[in-house]
Amino acid sequence: MKSKLFLVLFTFFVFQWSQSQNSIHAKLIDSTTQKPIAYATIELNKKSGVISNNNGVFQIYLNKKITAKDSLFINCLGYETKRVAVEKFNDSIIVLRQKSIELDEVLVSNKNYTVDEIIEKTQENLATNYDFEYTKSRLFYRQSDHNNMIKNTIDIKKSTIPEINQKFVDSVLDIMPKNSGNYSELLGDLYENPFAKNGLKLDIIKASNLYDKNNEISFEGLEEKFNTIFKKHVKRDSYFKIKSGIFGTKEEIDSSLFGDTKTDEDIEKTQAFIDEQKKKESERKKNFLKYRKRAIANLETSSFIFEDSHLNFLEKPNRYRFELLDYQFLNGEFVYKITFTPKRKEDFKGVLYINTDDFAIVRVDYENVKNLKNFRLLGISYSEYLKKGTFIYAKNNSDKYALKYAEVESGNKFGIKRPLKIIEKNKHVKGRRKQNEISTDVHFIVSNITKKELVVFENESITETAFNSVTEKAKVKPTYLPKYDPEFWQGYNVMEPNQAIKDFKSIE
Image 1 (cartoon, helix red, strand yellow):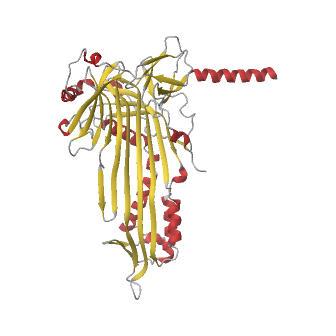
Image 2 (cartoon, rainbow, N blue to C red; image 1 turned 60 degrees about the vertical axis):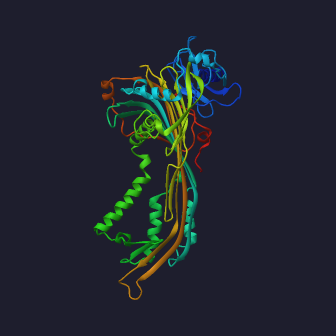
Image 3 (tube, rainbow, N blue to C red; image 1 turned 90 degrees about the horizontal axis):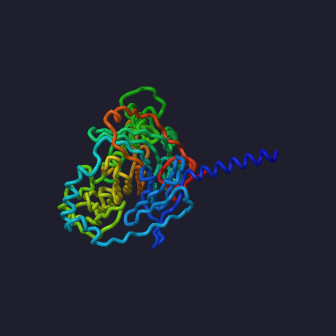
């Protein structure tokens, strides 16, 4: 009996040990500052790899038998390239040293260009430096959505319907989530045809959706509550006068509220509205492939290499001021470090890192300098106050630059602050037409922050035939996760989650 138990335990530990050898989990830090190094590229034998997250953490699965020839190559802007032998690796911390550069080193094979000449050559070489052919990319996409209810009050000034009082309204507001987070992740192969309008095909390998179902507001539940109250107090043939500030409108009562079965045009319109709300409530659970593919496409095409991008510093360089700050080191190459700021009405400033040999932009960091949208009228307000991001490019098997990493964070606020009055009238009731009145002051402010991250582990050119042969699995659905599960991506190379994701769990 003891020998059997020993055998089981021995097998278990051998299995755990072998599993641990199939992946490397570590943190990158600066040798001088001891601060984490984000967005470093970690490649196995310079073929495929991952990128460190905001905290400098990465995990890479090896998925092959390790030999003495296998090495990790770690590259990051401004640091010396580091080679680590996989077979002997046993550290949880990897230290990178900053690369000191002598100006003479850079200028050995380069003319001393002005900053305007550098930008001009970057624009001239755009079409030849970047890969605009048929490609296949193994990628990981993460979208994080955070909603914060800054203000939500409805003050009842007058109500002739007893059930619709301040206590009832406050109870409805209380069930609305004040803060909510939603994390969607997928791993897949993206096939791109640059010559077609919708030339993207996405083969999803695995996907997850991490959120709290308790924060979902049921449209059907609220609809049932209000219908019960209105059936009790509102006349069948009444109509509503709705006023907000100086504006007013008239709405007929939907007779289906009272159980009538006739299907006139008004009832059909009302039902269509209700169906639309229910559809929106479940939209993110359906057509996952379609909407995520669109999100990835929008993220990619927002880069400077595409026409009509908001990053138009190459397309319209006369609208920006450029300044050559320094030289840095990346992947064994020197790069110019150039800042750009708008002269007049443009929206973004940032930093460009341009290869000194071929004038390819290998990285851009940018952020908005002003609100991108502002709307305020009669108590309704909307602003897009945040948009910042990073694009990193690296050469693929065709010796062309392809997207390696993209991150875009955007934020907006929506607000309503105005009086709202609802009056029930009925011309068939003797005496005054006015039957009921609800008078309120409404004040809502909601902020939304969305962060999109895209990591490309492998990128290669493919033929048109290979692209056409790909068939998408249209009905892919993500796995719902009520809390962070460290085992979900076990065995897959993905971008390590940040602390907010690791700490997430639904409220029981």
